[in-house]
Amino acid sequence: MTYDELVSSAKSIHFETQNIYKTCSLGYILAMKTISIRDLKAHWAEVERQVRNGEVFEVLNRGRPAAMIVPPRPRAVLKWDNHLATAVENTGKKAEEVIEYDREERW
Image (tube, rainbow, N blue to C red):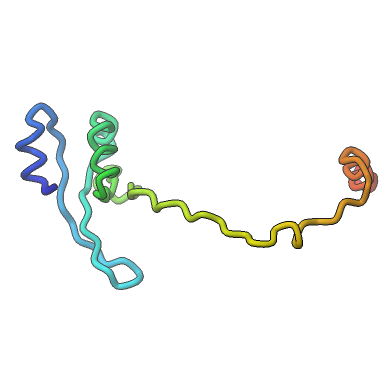
């Protein structure tokens, strides 16, 4: 959704954003919007909706970049085929005994 489409679809919400383009460390060009902290606080629900839909915002504090709000990456499912083979063997001691033994030198 472009900025113009957003403005036309949400006439009641007025906050300033600018489309900017930055080159990230990998050489990709990122298209993002800028928003002041004041406008972010006032219109958090709308900004959150846009971020969920893939938008990236750079938050400005007194005109200087302070933070970036980006959509979350999907969580990867941990695949651990033989997890029992790498588990620590049971020594037969209670957890409190192990903790006591570990703390003896420090207490």
